[in-house]
Image 1 (cartoon, rainbow, N blue to C red):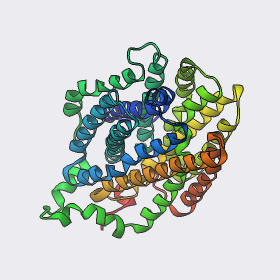
Image 2: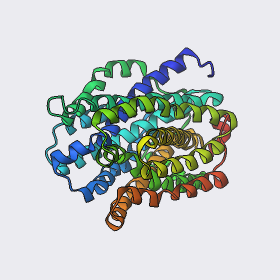
Image 3: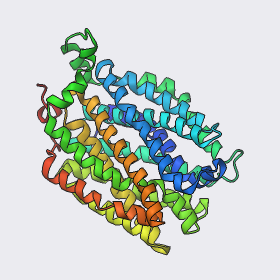
Length: 410
């Protein structure tokens, strides 16, 4: 473990708390899916479609990340935290599947933007040798949100209003807003860039970060997108249907799902830190190639196994997937200059959301054709190999290099 300065640990703790509640909301839709489905009378064949529409909310997050390249990371991060909190609370009061989709779509917009901006802040503030580790720590803290969601899931049949009470808990970040506003500072790199750039005089200047994506480093942009998209298509349905599969196919009670997420997840989420640290030491590309292949293998095993094999396969799946997520986050911020780093991170989120939406819609179509969620998910997992090959051959290495050396302004 590197010796980070106190200021860096404070920043990681602050953003980790924000990520925790981000992941809490994200986990609830999957974990409480059987209860939500029964209460709102959602047809079985529509589950993948609804999940895809909800994920589509993240497509619009790039609008907020573009603004962050003009107005600053801090201001937009505070906006996303407030927006996510209010949408989580609103979910507790939905009455129909349509209302659920609308509110969760809005939540995914703020959720995606918050995660992408948090990554940019870490990348810009930590030293080159520590970026991967820092992103891993933030990812691990964020993953505790899954543990929190799993913990309260055990009480879903005891709490007043059932699954709705789980979403009402999501109001807690509003109570921490004063701490966020006081402690969160603008990044030094953005402040320097803001001083050096010309004053924006029109719409063209405000949209310049978007134009830069196409003209400054187009090869990197295409390569990163070509790796992210197939990986998300392959893995989108994997976690979305875990809780439902455990409960409906293997007879797990909500409390048993909670135990798996709390005990197994304590091991699984260390993939964030392990991948981040290894990425700093031996390179992002090597770590990502191995973790992508192992994730697909573990996911295929999980959906085609039974009995005692399920927990270790789920742990392996979680360990590798969290590691891949950290590495994609690092690359999305490191490969591009400060002038449009948030916009590039937003593009990463946009492509990721497109892949997820495509994968979930494809799962619904394959379920109709194959008659099984397990077969539908397994059929898409080979796409992960495409992502691994693109990463190995076309994406530049960024480990232990200063951001200005990786992507100088042009």
